[in-house]
Length: 219
Image (tube, rainbow, N blue to C red; front, side, top):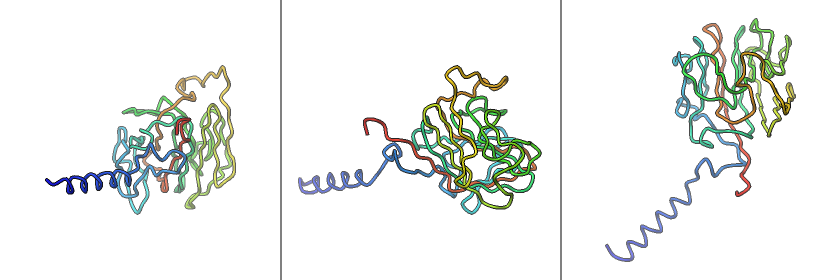
């Protein structure tokens, strides 16, 4: 191999490397958690067929299951972050968006917080509440069969939830926070994001699922 050819190959490899941006290098920018085609980067618990993909949407419909993000963005480990997604509920449906959680094969996640998704399900705790911590009771800010925008921001011990730009929950974890009984894992920390499949009668759609993490002090 000639010296000229070696130099050409080296230049090409450096150019290619420069064009590749790792998820970790996108701190401070919105990054997609869902490719719109498959559940790559996500892992479902127990009833795995509850979650399917169609027309750029994740559909939660089936027996109880939770879909945990396990992809490359920030190594699926979020502490301070912003999250946004577009959500649509069908009548009588229930779901949720978890943060600071971790994969569990069965049951309701024992770690992290649930941001409620519920427009008309019988549960009185409605869309936009921080479940069992700061709930939205009875009157949902969302409407079935209509897309709404879900936004979550976690900054240190402070959590903000907004539905269609309106703040529905703003909660700061007290220094001596004691979680509700039976929910000992409800503490600000870090972890991944998960979507909830609540029951066979619930049908909820998610799309445009994105997250933004702040740059580290060294970035």
